[in-house]
Image (cartoon, rainbow, N blue to C red; front, side):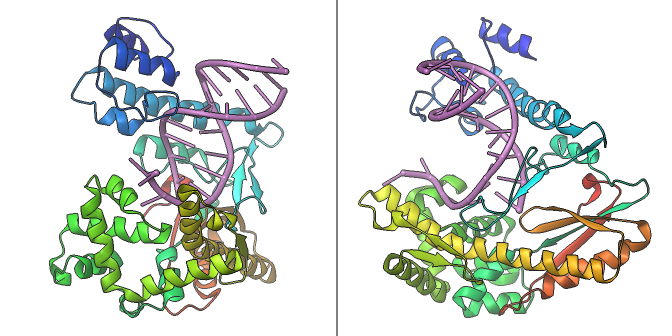
Length: 364
DNA sequence: GCATGATGCTT
DNA sequence: CTCGAGCATCATGCC
């Protein structure tokens, strides 16, 4: 693949060097690239995708990048970290690294093993239980951040949607685009999903426009419509930012603080960053509080019952356990109940559970 | 060996 | 001004 790319380029170069690649694409081959980085032309996937029709080399480069990432990070990269004595891989979880209260994982990071792309997802087959014939059981919170937003804002429409077990993205689409709930198209639902997602992060018209590949004005229109339909969320967000500017920090449901000195910056970008963090941290941080409480309770439950199964991983809104086959169904029930009942919100907390012989099989 | 930038993987 | 939170890789420049 590398050879073919060099042939199409008419020159041999280091394909792993963004600088050399940019030179080949935008100078030698005269493709029309937009500047994006401080040092020059960007060659990231989004930029290259926009050049797909300009030259057949582009598709090959994107494919090379995908495979090089998988081989470098997830195949070759994991091998040296296997403990030769135990023939097992152990990650390290950090409790005091992130600004929001989440855990982080390193050496290796097991919180970013591929799942979206099928080629990458196959990596997960390499992760299986310690003991042959044991099973993996996973449990993940369904839309936990939007449920926490419903709780924090006390928005009547959001709370109503979750109490009625409605599809929240469809509900947002119905409200924002003024279409009957049953008549929401999948394309409108996708847009609404991006809006919901953006609200959690403290959306900007630029960010939503980029995400949806639409104009800034149109994106701003969606945001305006959202806040018209969910006024309590606007009031909540306005209040959070005002309080954060007054006190200098925001808090989670369990009173974890994040100080945000950026909020008093004269620099617009820095101040905007502070405002987005003020909006997102109470949500992301409260979700982190929740799963930590659930983990403690689950561990206590496991010890109380003298179970052989154990918690292996936490990936922000999900837990992965390994269990003897005879404990599999019990673990499913314990994990679901413990995680759903760890705290009480104004809306139901919903947890989905899966089991399989390896990590790859833990799918919907 | 260390720092930084660009890129890409996750939630 | 391009959406929050992380970590790993490779290239590159500097010590």
